Length: 598
Image (spheres, rainbow, N blue to C red):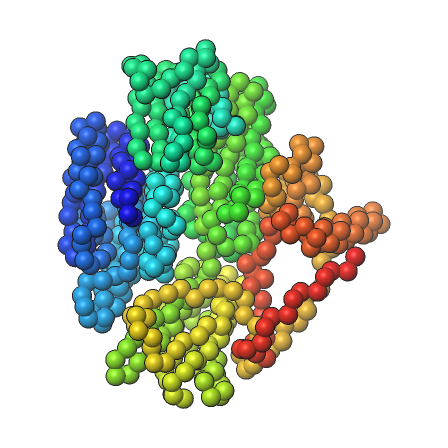
Protein backbone atom coordinates (compact mmCIF):
# COMPACT_ATOMS: atom_id res chain seq x y z
CA UNK A 1 0.00 0.00 0.00
CA UNK A 2 2.59 2.57 -1.10
CA UNK A 3 0.10 5.44 -1.10
CA UNK A 4 -1.32 4.36 2.28
CA UNK A 5 -4.84 4.12 0.86
CA UNK A 6 -5.87 2.27 4.01
CA UNK A 7 -6.49 5.72 5.49
CA UNK A 8 -9.17 6.88 2.98
CA UNK A 9 -10.67 3.36 3.08
CA UNK A 10 -11.08 3.59 6.86
CA UNK A 11 -12.40 7.14 6.51
CA UNK A 12 -15.05 5.92 4.06
CA UNK A 13 -16.40 3.41 6.57
CA UNK A 14 -16.17 6.07 9.27
CA UNK A 15 -18.51 8.25 7.23
CA UNK A 16 -20.91 5.41 6.42
CA UNK A 17 -21.35 3.81 9.86
CA UNK A 18 -24.84 4.85 11.07
CA UNK A 19 -25.25 7.09 14.10
CA UNK A 20 -25.90 5.11 17.26
CA UNK A 21 -23.80 2.12 16.16
CA UNK A 22 -20.65 1.20 18.05
CA UNK A 23 -17.36 1.00 16.19
CA UNK A 24 -13.60 0.94 16.71
CA UNK A 25 -10.33 0.48 14.82
CA UNK A 26 -7.40 -1.73 15.84
CA UNK A 27 -3.96 -1.85 14.23
CA UNK A 28 -1.67 -4.80 14.74
CA UNK A 29 1.81 -6.09 14.02
CA UNK A 30 3.60 -7.85 16.81
CA UNK A 31 1.32 -6.00 19.23
CA UNK A 32 -2.27 -4.80 19.00
CA UNK A 33 -3.23 -1.14 19.39
CA UNK A 34 -6.81 0.12 19.79
CA UNK A 35 -6.24 3.07 17.48
CA UNK A 36 -9.85 4.35 17.53
CA UNK A 37 -11.76 3.69 20.75
CA UNK A 38 -14.73 1.35 20.49
CA UNK A 39 -17.72 3.52 21.36
CA UNK A 40 -21.01 4.97 20.11
CA UNK A 41 -20.74 6.59 16.68
CA UNK A 42 -21.57 10.28 16.40
CA UNK A 43 -19.99 13.34 14.79
CA UNK A 44 -17.40 13.61 17.59
CA UNK A 45 -16.38 9.97 17.13
CA UNK A 46 -16.05 10.46 13.36
CA UNK A 47 -13.81 13.49 13.81
CA UNK A 48 -11.65 11.58 16.29
CA UNK A 49 -11.51 8.50 14.02
CA UNK A 50 -10.34 10.53 11.01
CA UNK A 51 -7.65 12.20 13.09
CA UNK A 52 -6.39 8.90 14.53
CA UNK A 53 -6.48 7.22 11.09
CA UNK A 54 -3.60 9.46 10.04
CA UNK A 55 -1.38 7.32 12.28
CA UNK A 56 -1.93 4.14 10.20
CA UNK A 57 1.47 2.99 8.93
CA UNK A 58 3.52 -0.07 7.98
CA UNK A 59 6.31 -0.08 10.55
CA UNK A 60 5.26 -3.24 12.44
CA UNK A 61 7.43 -6.28 11.76
CA UNK A 62 5.06 -9.18 12.50
CA UNK A 63 1.45 -10.16 11.82
CA UNK A 64 -0.41 -11.16 14.98
CA UNK A 65 -3.86 -11.85 13.53
CA UNK A 66 -4.99 -13.99 16.46
CA UNK A 67 -4.29 -11.33 19.08
CA UNK A 68 -6.01 -8.69 16.92
CA UNK A 69 -9.19 -10.76 16.68
CA UNK A 70 -9.11 -11.47 20.42
CA UNK A 71 -8.61 -7.84 21.40
CA UNK A 72 -11.32 -6.56 19.07
CA UNK A 73 -13.81 -9.17 20.31
CA UNK A 74 -13.00 -9.16 24.00
CA UNK A 75 -16.35 -7.57 24.91
CA UNK A 76 -18.32 -10.50 23.41
CA UNK A 77 -19.69 -12.48 26.34
CA UNK A 78 -19.89 -16.27 26.21
CA UNK A 79 -23.45 -17.53 25.88
CA UNK A 80 -24.70 -14.25 24.42
CA UNK A 81 -25.62 -13.68 20.77
CA UNK A 82 -24.29 -10.79 18.65
CA UNK A 83 -25.68 -11.44 15.15
CA UNK A 84 -25.28 -7.78 14.15
CA UNK A 85 -21.62 -7.56 15.14
CA UNK A 86 -19.15 -7.53 12.26
CA UNK A 87 -15.35 -7.49 12.13
CA UNK A 88 -13.51 -6.40 8.98
CA UNK A 89 -9.99 -7.85 9.04
CA UNK A 90 -7.39 -6.38 6.68
CA UNK A 91 -3.98 -8.01 6.36
CA UNK A 92 -1.26 -8.20 3.72
CA UNK A 93 0.52 -11.29 4.99
CA UNK A 94 0.51 -14.60 6.85
CA UNK A 95 0.43 -15.52 10.53
CA UNK A 96 3.83 -14.42 11.81
CA UNK A 97 4.35 -14.16 15.55
CA UNK A 98 7.81 -15.70 15.91
CA UNK A 99 10.96 -16.57 13.97
CA UNK A 100 10.33 -20.27 14.70
CA UNK A 101 8.01 -21.74 11.99
CA UNK A 102 6.52 -24.29 14.39
CA UNK A 103 5.15 -21.51 16.60
CA UNK A 104 3.56 -19.79 13.62
CA UNK A 105 1.97 -23.06 12.51
CA UNK A 106 0.59 -23.66 16.00
CA UNK A 107 -0.76 -20.11 16.17
CA UNK A 108 -2.49 -20.49 12.79
CA UNK A 109 -4.22 -23.65 14.04
CA UNK A 110 -5.22 -21.82 17.21
CA UNK A 111 -6.81 -19.01 15.16
CA UNK A 112 -8.81 -21.50 13.08
CA UNK A 113 -9.66 -23.43 16.25
CA UNK A 114 -10.65 -21.73 19.52
CA UNK A 115 -10.29 -18.11 18.35
CA UNK A 116 -12.68 -18.54 15.40
CA UNK A 117 -15.00 -20.85 17.35
CA UNK A 118 -15.43 -18.30 20.13
CA UNK A 119 -16.44 -15.54 17.70
CA UNK A 120 -18.66 -17.78 15.56
CA UNK A 121 -20.52 -19.16 18.58
CA UNK A 122 -21.71 -15.65 19.43
CA UNK A 123 -23.18 -15.20 15.94
CA UNK A 124 -20.69 -12.45 15.05
CA UNK A 125 -19.17 -12.32 11.56
CA UNK A 126 -15.59 -11.89 10.33
CA UNK A 127 -15.13 -10.33 6.88
CA UNK A 128 -11.59 -10.67 5.56
CA UNK A 129 -9.72 -8.48 3.09
CA UNK A 130 -6.34 -9.56 1.72
CA UNK A 131 -4.17 -6.69 0.52
CA UNK A 132 -1.71 -9.00 -1.22
CA UNK A 133 -1.78 -12.12 -3.36
CA UNK A 134 0.86 -13.45 -0.97
CA UNK A 135 -1.54 -13.30 1.97
CA UNK A 136 -2.72 -16.57 3.51
CA UNK A 137 -5.85 -16.90 1.38
CA UNK A 138 -6.89 -20.29 2.81
CA UNK A 139 -6.82 -18.74 6.29
CA UNK A 140 -8.82 -15.71 5.15
CA UNK A 141 -11.44 -17.91 3.46
CA UNK A 142 -11.81 -20.20 6.46
CA UNK A 143 -12.25 -17.28 8.86
CA UNK A 144 -15.00 -15.86 6.65
CA UNK A 145 -16.77 -19.15 5.93
CA UNK A 146 -16.58 -20.27 9.56
CA UNK A 147 -18.29 -17.09 10.76
CA UNK A 148 -20.64 -16.38 7.85
CA UNK A 149 -18.60 -13.48 6.50
CA UNK A 150 -17.22 -12.29 3.17
CA UNK A 151 -13.63 -12.78 1.99
CA UNK A 152 -12.08 -10.76 -0.79
CA UNK A 153 -8.74 -9.86 -2.33
CA UNK A 154 -7.88 -6.25 -3.11
CA UNK A 155 -5.85 -6.65 -6.31
CA UNK A 156 -4.23 -3.31 -5.56
CA UNK A 157 -4.51 -0.66 -2.89
CA UNK A 158 -6.65 1.33 -5.35
CA UNK A 159 -9.35 -1.33 -4.89
CA UNK A 160 -9.27 -1.16 -1.12
CA UNK A 161 -12.19 1.22 -0.59
CA UNK A 162 -14.40 -0.86 -2.91
CA UNK A 163 -13.52 -4.10 -1.15
CA UNK A 164 -14.04 -2.52 2.28
CA UNK A 165 -17.42 -1.32 1.07
CA UNK A 166 -18.43 -4.83 -0.01
CA UNK A 167 -17.76 -6.12 3.50
CA UNK A 168 -19.52 -3.11 5.02
CA UNK A 169 -22.61 -3.72 2.89
CA UNK A 170 -22.96 -7.16 4.43
CA UNK A 171 -22.93 -5.56 7.87
CA UNK A 172 -25.19 -2.60 7.05
CA UNK A 173 -27.38 -3.32 3.97
CA UNK A 174 -28.60 -0.11 2.39
CA UNK A 175 -31.45 0.63 0.03
CA UNK A 176 -30.50 2.31 -3.23
CA UNK A 177 -31.97 4.04 -6.25
CA UNK A 178 -30.42 2.81 -9.52
CA UNK A 179 -28.00 5.00 -11.46
CA UNK A 180 -28.90 4.87 -15.15
CA UNK A 181 -26.14 6.41 -17.21
CA UNK A 182 -25.25 9.41 -15.07
CA UNK A 183 -28.76 10.04 -13.72
CA UNK A 184 -30.92 8.84 -10.85
CA UNK A 185 -34.50 9.65 -9.87
CA UNK A 186 -35.52 10.97 -6.45
CA UNK A 187 -39.20 10.63 -5.51
CA UNK A 188 -41.27 12.45 -2.89
CA UNK A 189 -40.86 9.72 -0.25
CA UNK A 190 -37.07 10.15 -0.04
CA UNK A 191 -35.87 12.24 2.88
CA UNK A 192 -32.14 11.96 2.19
CA UNK A 193 -29.75 10.46 -0.33
CA UNK A 194 -26.01 9.77 -0.26
CA UNK A 195 -24.11 9.55 -3.54
CA UNK A 196 -20.83 7.64 -3.37
CA UNK A 197 -18.93 8.42 -6.56
CA UNK A 198 -15.67 6.56 -7.17
CA UNK A 199 -13.23 8.52 -9.30
CA UNK A 200 -9.96 7.85 -11.07
CA UNK A 201 -6.81 9.86 -10.46
CA UNK A 202 -6.78 12.93 -12.68
CA UNK A 203 -10.52 12.80 -13.44
CA UNK A 204 -12.48 16.04 -13.61
CA UNK A 205 -14.11 17.26 -10.37
CA UNK A 206 -17.42 15.68 -9.43
CA UNK A 207 -20.52 17.89 -9.49
CA UNK A 208 -24.23 17.26 -8.97
CA UNK A 209 -26.98 18.81 -11.08
CA UNK A 210 -30.37 19.08 -9.36
CA UNK A 211 -33.76 18.72 -11.11
CA UNK A 212 -34.00 22.51 -11.43
CA UNK A 213 -30.56 22.43 -13.19
CA UNK A 214 -28.64 23.97 -10.30
CA UNK A 215 -25.02 22.81 -10.23
CA UNK A 216 -23.84 21.71 -6.79
CA UNK A 217 -20.16 21.39 -5.89
CA UNK A 218 -18.10 21.42 -2.67
CA UNK A 219 -17.84 25.21 -2.70
CA UNK A 220 -21.60 25.76 -3.08
CA UNK A 221 -22.00 26.18 0.67
CA UNK A 222 -25.51 24.69 0.86
CA UNK A 223 -26.57 23.75 4.40
CA UNK A 224 -28.55 20.76 3.15
CA UNK A 225 -25.47 19.26 1.43
CA UNK A 226 -22.63 17.46 3.25
CA UNK A 227 -19.67 16.85 0.93
CA UNK A 228 -16.70 14.66 1.88
CA UNK A 229 -13.77 14.12 -0.49
CA UNK A 230 -10.91 11.65 -0.14
CA UNK A 231 -8.49 9.75 -2.34
CA UNK A 232 -10.49 7.82 -4.92
CA UNK A 233 -14.02 8.88 -4.06
CA UNK A 234 -16.53 11.65 -3.30
CA UNK A 235 -19.31 11.17 -0.73
CA UNK A 236 -22.23 13.61 -1.05
CA UNK A 237 -25.27 13.60 1.25
CA UNK A 238 -28.29 15.76 0.42
CA UNK A 239 -31.11 16.25 2.97
CA UNK A 240 -34.71 16.82 1.83
CA UNK A 241 -33.68 16.63 -1.85
CA UNK A 242 -35.83 18.03 -4.65
CA UNK A 243 -38.03 15.51 -6.42
CA UNK A 244 -37.04 14.61 -9.96
CA UNK A 245 -33.99 13.54 -11.98
CA UNK A 246 -30.55 14.28 -10.58
CA UNK A 247 -27.38 14.04 -12.68
CA UNK A 248 -23.83 13.20 -11.62
CA UNK A 249 -21.61 15.44 -13.73
CA UNK A 250 -18.57 13.15 -13.80
CA UNK A 251 -17.27 9.90 -15.23
CA UNK A 252 -19.35 7.46 -13.18
CA UNK A 253 -17.55 4.30 -12.12
CA UNK A 254 -19.74 1.14 -12.16
CA UNK A 255 -19.21 0.72 -8.40
CA UNK A 256 -20.69 4.14 -7.67
CA UNK A 257 -24.10 4.17 -6.02
CA UNK A 258 -26.82 6.26 -4.43
CA UNK A 259 -28.27 5.10 -1.10
CA UNK A 260 -31.43 6.60 0.38
CA UNK A 261 -33.41 7.18 3.54
CA UNK A 262 -37.12 6.97 2.74
CA UNK A 263 -40.57 6.59 4.29
CA UNK A 264 -41.20 3.96 1.60
CA UNK A 265 -38.79 1.17 2.42
CA UNK A 266 -38.01 -2.07 0.63
CA UNK A 267 -37.60 -5.07 2.93
CA UNK A 268 -35.53 -7.84 1.27
CA UNK A 269 -34.48 -11.25 2.61
CA UNK A 270 -30.99 -11.21 4.13
CA UNK A 271 -28.99 -13.79 2.17
CA UNK A 272 -26.03 -15.79 3.52
CA UNK A 273 -22.54 -14.64 2.55
CA UNK A 274 -21.48 -18.17 1.58
CA UNK A 275 -23.38 -20.97 -0.13
CA UNK A 276 -22.45 -24.37 -1.53
CA UNK A 277 -23.49 -26.34 -4.59
CA UNK A 278 -27.10 -27.46 -4.25
CA UNK A 279 -28.13 -24.70 -1.85
CA UNK A 280 -31.38 -22.89 -2.64
CA UNK A 281 -31.85 -19.16 -2.08
CA UNK A 282 -35.38 -17.95 -1.40
CA UNK A 283 -35.53 -14.23 -2.13
CA UNK A 284 -38.49 -12.25 -0.80
CA UNK A 285 -39.19 -8.53 -1.05
CA UNK A 286 -41.92 -6.41 0.48
CA UNK A 287 -42.58 -2.69 0.87
CA UNK A 288 -43.02 -0.89 4.14
CA UNK A 289 -44.72 2.46 4.70
CA UNK A 290 -43.84 3.84 8.12
CA UNK A 291 -42.83 0.32 9.11
CA UNK A 292 -46.07 -1.38 8.00
CA UNK A 293 -46.19 -3.91 5.14
CA UNK A 294 -48.10 -2.56 2.14
CA UNK A 295 -50.73 -5.05 0.91
CA UNK A 296 -52.82 -2.69 -1.21
CA UNK A 297 -53.42 -4.45 -4.56
CA UNK A 298 -53.73 -1.18 -6.49
CA UNK A 299 -50.24 -0.19 -5.35
CA UNK A 300 -48.66 -3.61 -5.82
CA UNK A 301 -50.14 -4.13 -9.29
CA UNK A 302 -48.17 -1.25 -10.81
CA UNK A 303 -44.83 -2.54 -9.52
CA UNK A 304 -42.35 -4.32 -11.77
CA UNK A 305 -40.07 -6.29 -9.47
CA UNK A 306 -37.10 -8.15 -11.01
CA UNK A 307 -34.53 -10.47 -9.51
CA UNK A 308 -31.14 -9.87 -11.19
CA UNK A 309 -28.18 -12.24 -10.81
CA UNK A 310 -24.73 -11.05 -11.97
CA UNK A 311 -21.55 -13.11 -11.95
CA UNK A 312 -17.94 -11.97 -11.58
CA UNK A 313 -17.56 -11.51 -15.33
CA UNK A 314 -20.42 -9.00 -15.38
CA UNK A 315 -22.84 -11.30 -17.20
CA UNK A 316 -26.33 -11.22 -15.75
CA UNK A 317 -29.85 -12.50 -16.15
CA UNK A 318 -33.12 -11.51 -14.59
CA UNK A 319 -36.49 -12.95 -13.73
CA UNK A 320 -39.75 -11.23 -12.76
CA UNK A 321 -40.76 -11.71 -9.13
CA UNK A 322 -44.42 -12.33 -8.32
CA UNK A 323 -46.65 -11.88 -5.27
CA UNK A 324 -49.20 -14.36 -3.99
CA UNK A 325 -51.48 -11.55 -2.84
CA UNK A 326 -49.85 -11.19 0.57
CA UNK A 327 -47.79 -8.14 -0.40
CA UNK A 328 -44.55 -10.14 -0.62
CA UNK A 329 -42.78 -10.70 -3.95
CA UNK A 330 -40.78 -13.92 -4.07
CA UNK A 331 -38.51 -15.95 -6.32
CA UNK A 332 -36.02 -18.78 -5.92
CA UNK A 333 -32.42 -19.11 -7.07
CA UNK A 334 -31.29 -22.72 -7.26
CA UNK A 335 -28.47 -24.71 -8.78
CA UNK A 336 -25.90 -21.97 -9.19
CA UNK A 337 -23.09 -23.76 -10.92
CA UNK A 338 -19.83 -21.83 -11.20
CA UNK A 339 -17.87 -21.00 -8.08
CA UNK A 340 -17.33 -17.32 -7.34
CA UNK A 341 -19.10 -14.19 -6.15
CA UNK A 342 -22.62 -13.40 -7.35
CA UNK A 343 -24.33 -10.05 -6.97
CA UNK A 344 -28.02 -10.61 -6.20
CA UNK A 345 -30.17 -7.53 -6.78
CA UNK A 346 -33.87 -6.78 -6.51
CA UNK A 347 -34.84 -3.99 -8.93
CA UNK A 348 -38.18 -2.20 -8.61
CA UNK A 349 -39.85 0.10 -11.10
CA UNK A 350 -42.89 1.70 -9.50
CA UNK A 351 -43.53 4.10 -12.41
CA UNK A 352 -43.14 7.12 -10.09
CA UNK A 353 -40.19 5.71 -8.13
CA UNK A 354 -37.34 3.23 -8.47
CA UNK A 355 -35.48 1.14 -5.92
CA UNK A 356 -32.56 -1.32 -5.84
CA UNK A 357 -31.31 -3.61 -3.10
CA UNK A 358 -28.05 -5.55 -3.62
CA UNK A 359 -26.30 -8.37 -1.78
CA UNK A 360 -23.25 -10.48 -2.60
CA UNK A 361 -23.14 -14.25 -2.07
CA UNK A 362 -20.14 -16.49 -2.67
CA UNK A 363 -20.57 -19.97 -4.12
CA UNK A 364 -17.88 -22.00 -2.39
CA UNK A 365 -16.44 -25.45 -3.09
CA UNK A 366 -17.39 -28.04 -0.46
CA UNK A 367 -13.72 -28.84 0.20
CA UNK A 368 -10.60 -26.73 0.57
CA UNK A 369 -7.12 -27.90 -0.47
CA UNK A 370 -4.04 -26.19 0.93
CA UNK A 371 -0.36 -27.04 0.64
CA UNK A 372 2.52 -26.15 2.95
CA UNK A 373 6.23 -26.92 3.04
CA UNK A 374 8.13 -27.80 6.21
CA UNK A 375 11.93 -27.79 6.38
CA UNK A 376 14.22 -29.27 8.98
CA UNK A 377 15.75 -32.71 9.47
CA UNK A 378 12.69 -34.42 7.94
CA UNK A 379 11.53 -32.06 5.17
CA UNK A 380 8.05 -32.63 3.80
CA UNK A 381 5.21 -31.02 1.89
CA UNK A 382 1.87 -31.37 3.61
CA UNK A 383 -1.51 -31.37 1.89
CA UNK A 384 -4.52 -30.54 4.07
CA UNK A 385 -8.03 -31.26 2.78
CA UNK A 386 -10.82 -29.58 4.77
CA UNK A 387 -14.59 -29.94 4.50
CA UNK A 388 -15.96 -26.38 4.50
CA UNK A 389 -19.64 -27.16 4.93
CA UNK A 390 -21.43 -28.98 7.74
CA UNK A 391 -23.49 -30.72 5.06
CA UNK A 392 -20.77 -33.35 4.49
CA UNK A 393 -20.97 -36.85 5.95
CA UNK A 394 -17.43 -37.00 7.36
CA UNK A 395 -17.55 -40.72 8.19
CA UNK A 396 -18.73 -41.48 4.66
CA UNK A 397 -15.95 -39.49 2.97
CA UNK A 398 -12.59 -40.83 1.82
CA UNK A 399 -9.58 -39.04 0.37
CA UNK A 400 -7.00 -40.78 -1.83
CA UNK A 401 -3.77 -39.59 -3.44
CA UNK A 402 -1.44 -40.86 -6.14
CA UNK A 403 2.16 -39.68 -5.81
CA UNK A 404 4.55 -39.98 -8.78
CA UNK A 405 8.22 -39.83 -7.79
CA UNK A 406 11.07 -38.36 -9.88
CA UNK A 407 12.16 -41.89 -10.86
CA UNK A 408 8.77 -42.56 -12.48
CA UNK A 409 7.38 -44.87 -9.81
CA UNK A 410 3.89 -44.19 -8.46
CA UNK A 411 2.27 -44.95 -5.12
CA UNK A 412 -1.45 -44.75 -4.25
CA UNK A 413 -2.28 -44.13 -0.62
CA UNK A 414 -5.28 -43.24 1.51
CA UNK A 415 -5.10 -39.80 3.12
CA UNK A 416 -5.67 -40.07 6.84
CA UNK A 417 -8.45 -38.14 8.55
CA UNK A 418 -7.44 -36.12 11.60
CA UNK A 419 -9.53 -37.64 14.36
CA UNK A 420 -12.34 -35.44 15.62
CA UNK A 421 -11.96 -32.88 12.81
CA UNK A 422 -13.16 -32.25 9.27
CA UNK A 423 -9.61 -32.50 7.91
CA UNK A 424 -7.47 -35.05 6.06
CA UNK A 425 -3.67 -34.70 5.93
CA UNK A 426 -1.07 -36.14 3.58
CA UNK A 427 2.70 -35.81 4.08
CA UNK A 428 4.76 -35.99 0.87
CA UNK A 429 8.36 -36.94 1.69
CA UNK A 430 11.41 -37.46 -0.60
CA UNK A 431 11.30 -41.25 -0.34
CA UNK A 432 12.72 -41.64 -3.86
CA UNK A 433 15.30 -38.88 -3.47
CA UNK A 434 15.38 -35.25 -4.54
CA UNK A 435 13.42 -33.97 -7.52
CA UNK A 436 9.87 -33.17 -8.55
CA UNK A 437 6.97 -35.17 -7.10
CA UNK A 438 3.56 -34.96 -8.77
CA UNK A 439 0.43 -35.52 -6.70
CA UNK A 440 -3.15 -36.22 -7.80
CA UNK A 441 -5.91 -36.17 -5.17
CA UNK A 442 -9.47 -37.50 -5.21
CA UNK A 443 -12.23 -36.87 -2.67
CA UNK A 444 -15.09 -39.37 -2.60
CA UNK A 445 -17.90 -38.70 -0.20
CA UNK A 446 -21.50 -37.81 0.26
CA UNK A 447 -23.63 -35.11 1.74
CA UNK A 448 -25.70 -35.74 4.85
CA UNK A 449 -28.74 -35.88 2.59
CA UNK A 450 -27.16 -38.78 0.66
CA UNK A 451 -25.96 -36.97 -2.48
CA UNK A 452 -22.57 -38.16 -3.76
CA UNK A 453 -19.63 -35.78 -3.88
CA UNK A 454 -16.56 -36.50 -6.04
CA UNK A 455 -13.94 -33.80 -6.32
CA UNK A 456 -10.38 -33.46 -7.58
CA UNK A 457 -8.06 -30.46 -7.60
CA UNK A 458 -5.59 -30.16 -10.42
CA UNK A 459 -2.43 -32.25 -10.24
CA UNK A 460 0.18 -30.29 -8.29
CA UNK A 461 3.95 -30.52 -8.00
CA UNK A 462 6.33 -30.30 -5.03
CA UNK A 463 10.11 -30.01 -5.04
CA UNK A 464 12.87 -31.54 -2.91
CA UNK A 465 15.00 -30.06 -1.58
CA UNK A 466 12.43 -27.43 -0.63
CA UNK A 467 13.29 -24.23 -2.56
CA UNK A 468 14.65 -21.37 -0.51
CA UNK A 469 11.82 -19.07 0.57
CA UNK A 470 9.04 -21.64 0.16
CA UNK A 471 9.44 -23.35 3.53
CA UNK A 472 6.46 -22.69 5.82
CA UNK A 473 4.45 -20.94 3.11
CA UNK A 474 0.81 -21.99 2.76
CA UNK A 475 -0.86 -21.85 -0.63
CA UNK A 476 -4.25 -22.89 -1.98
CA UNK A 477 -4.40 -25.72 -4.50
CA UNK A 478 -6.65 -24.73 -7.38
CA UNK A 479 -9.77 -26.81 -7.73
CA UNK A 480 -9.86 -27.77 -11.37
CA UNK A 481 -11.22 -31.10 -12.56
CA UNK A 482 -8.38 -33.60 -12.82
CA UNK A 483 -7.82 -36.23 -15.47
CA UNK A 484 -8.65 -39.81 -14.40
CA UNK A 485 -5.88 -41.32 -12.25
CA UNK A 486 -5.19 -45.02 -12.38
CA UNK A 487 -6.14 -46.89 -9.24
CA UNK A 488 -8.42 -44.32 -7.63
CA UNK A 489 -11.60 -44.63 -9.68
CA UNK A 490 -13.45 -46.64 -12.21
CA UNK A 491 -14.43 -45.05 -15.53
CA UNK A 492 -17.64 -43.09 -15.23
CA UNK A 493 -20.76 -44.30 -17.00
CA UNK A 494 -21.78 -41.87 -19.74
CA UNK A 495 -24.79 -39.85 -18.73
CA UNK A 496 -27.91 -40.20 -20.91
CA UNK A 497 -28.66 -37.23 -23.10
CA UNK A 498 -31.29 -34.91 -21.68
CA UNK A 499 -33.89 -33.14 -23.74
CA UNK A 500 -33.95 -29.40 -23.39
CA UNK A 501 -37.12 -27.37 -23.69
CA UNK A 502 -38.15 -23.81 -23.18
CA UNK A 503 -39.95 -23.26 -19.87
CA UNK A 504 -43.49 -22.10 -20.78
CA UNK A 505 -44.24 -20.49 -17.41
CA UNK A 506 -41.25 -19.16 -15.55
CA UNK A 507 -43.30 -17.74 -12.72
CA UNK A 508 -44.19 -21.29 -11.68
CA UNK A 509 -40.72 -22.79 -12.12
CA UNK A 510 -37.77 -22.83 -9.80
CA UNK A 511 -35.08 -23.25 -12.44
CA UNK A 512 -31.99 -21.14 -12.28
CA UNK A 513 -31.63 -18.16 -14.61
CA UNK A 514 -29.02 -18.50 -17.30
CA UNK A 515 -26.67 -15.57 -17.06
CA UNK A 516 -26.39 -13.64 -20.29
CA UNK A 517 -25.26 -10.10 -20.99
CA UNK A 518 -28.07 -7.75 -19.98
CA UNK A 519 -27.88 -5.89 -23.26
CA UNK A 520 -28.97 -9.10 -25.00
CA UNK A 521 -32.18 -9.32 -22.98
CA UNK A 522 -35.04 -7.90 -25.00
CA UNK A 523 -38.18 -7.18 -22.96
CA UNK A 524 -40.38 -9.44 -25.04
CA UNK A 525 -37.86 -12.27 -24.75
CA UNK A 526 -37.45 -12.29 -20.98
CA UNK A 527 -39.47 -15.48 -20.80
CA UNK A 528 -36.92 -17.52 -22.74
CA UNK A 529 -33.83 -16.76 -20.74
CA UNK A 530 -34.19 -19.86 -18.58
CA UNK A 531 -34.01 -23.57 -19.36
CA UNK A 532 -36.26 -26.26 -17.90
CA UNK A 533 -34.83 -29.79 -18.00
CA UNK A 534 -37.30 -32.66 -18.19
CA UNK A 535 -39.71 -34.53 -20.41
CA UNK A 536 -43.36 -33.93 -21.27
CA UNK A 537 -45.77 -36.81 -21.96
CA UNK A 538 -48.02 -36.97 -25.02
CA UNK A 539 -47.78 -36.27 -28.73
CA UNK A 540 -47.43 -32.50 -28.34
CA UNK A 541 -44.62 -33.14 -25.87
CA UNK A 542 -42.65 -35.10 -28.46
CA UNK A 543 -42.77 -32.15 -30.84
CA UNK A 544 -41.67 -29.76 -28.09
CA UNK A 545 -38.85 -32.11 -27.13
CA UNK A 546 -37.68 -32.25 -30.76
CA UNK A 547 -37.75 -28.45 -31.04
CA UNK A 548 -35.90 -28.20 -27.74
CA UNK A 549 -33.21 -30.58 -28.96
CA UNK A 550 -32.75 -28.59 -32.19
CA UNK A 551 -32.59 -25.39 -30.15
CA UNK A 552 -29.97 -26.98 -27.87
CA UNK A 553 -27.62 -27.95 -30.72
CA UNK A 554 -28.04 -24.61 -32.46
CA UNK A 555 -27.11 -22.81 -29.25
CA UNK A 556 -24.23 -25.18 -28.70
CA UNK A 557 -22.85 -24.39 -32.17
CA UNK A 558 -23.28 -20.68 -31.59
CA UNK A 559 -21.52 -20.91 -28.24
CA UNK A 560 -18.55 -22.59 -29.95
CA UNK A 561 -18.42 -19.88 -32.60
CA UNK A 562 -18.97 -16.97 -30.21
CA UNK A 563 -17.22 -17.82 -26.93
CA UNK A 564 -17.63 -14.30 -25.55
CA UNK A 565 -21.41 -14.72 -25.59
CA UNK A 566 -21.42 -18.21 -24.12
CA UNK A 567 -24.11 -18.73 -21.52
CA UNK A 568 -22.67 -19.03 -18.01
CA UNK A 569 -24.05 -22.43 -17.09
CA UNK A 570 -21.00 -24.47 -15.98
CA UNK A 571 -22.06 -26.76 -13.17
CA UNK A 572 -19.81 -27.12 -10.18
CA UNK A 573 -21.29 -30.58 -9.90
CA UNK A 574 -19.78 -31.39 -13.30
CA UNK A 575 -16.45 -31.15 -11.50
CA UNK A 576 -17.69 -33.60 -8.90
CA UNK A 577 -18.65 -36.34 -11.37
CA UNK A 578 -17.45 -39.83 -10.61
CA UNK A 579 -14.86 -39.92 -13.36
CA UNK A 580 -12.06 -42.41 -13.20
CA UNK A 581 -8.60 -41.17 -12.38
CA UNK A 582 -7.11 -44.49 -13.39
CA UNK A 583 -5.21 -43.36 -16.46
CA UNK A 584 -3.83 -39.92 -15.67
CA UNK A 585 -0.76 -39.01 -17.66
CA UNK A 586 1.09 -36.42 -15.60
CA UNK A 587 3.15 -35.27 -18.58
CA UNK A 588 0.55 -35.25 -21.35
CA UNK A 589 -0.77 -32.04 -22.80
CA UNK A 590 -4.60 -31.78 -22.74
CA UNK A 591 -6.17 -32.44 -26.13
CA UNK A 592 -8.28 -29.64 -27.61
CA UNK A 593 -12.02 -30.23 -27.51
CA UNK A 594 -13.44 -31.26 -30.92
CA UNK A 595 -15.63 -28.84 -32.79
CA UNK A 596 -19.33 -29.68 -32.23
CA UNK A 597 -21.09 -31.13 -35.26
CA UNK A 598 -24.07 -29.19 -36.60
